[in-house]
Length: 207
Image (cartoon, rainbow, N blue to C red; front, side, top):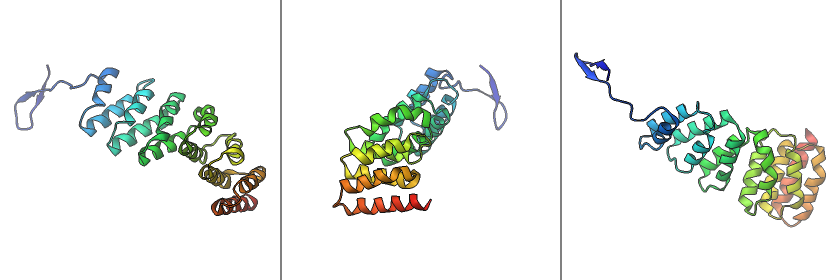
């Protein structure tokens, strides 16, 4: 074992690494009680191929904000279909910070997210459909308005339709106007839907 110069003269033994630097060792390090040690593990795992499922799974248990942020940064950089598959379950999370960070990363992955959007918009949980529309609000994908128009036409939940109107206001073109009007007619007694439809229409016509 090597020797290292001590701060006040003499030599002391170099302590062996507590964790191996291979995948198994880094995954063990990810369970360390010290969040600083876990952050180092995430940093090193970012250079390991096909580690997205491990990091996504760890998000369900990680409590330290800085470790979470490093994981999300690593996953955003990878942007693979495995990342999308691993983060989509977080749309059901009760932890708003965790869920919002997942939405932010998923919104940056149009190619990886595209194949899953229709299934998510058919989910029986209205909250999942709303959070999927939150993803669409920033997703740079050519089918965004087709998906949003489907929600405006068919979704039975007023809050989902309100979320779809918000996306239409941000990203819609004049092609979306008939679907906005259809949403208004589907909920004629809901004042908020009427207001949101008016706002979407005005923003599109002014753009």
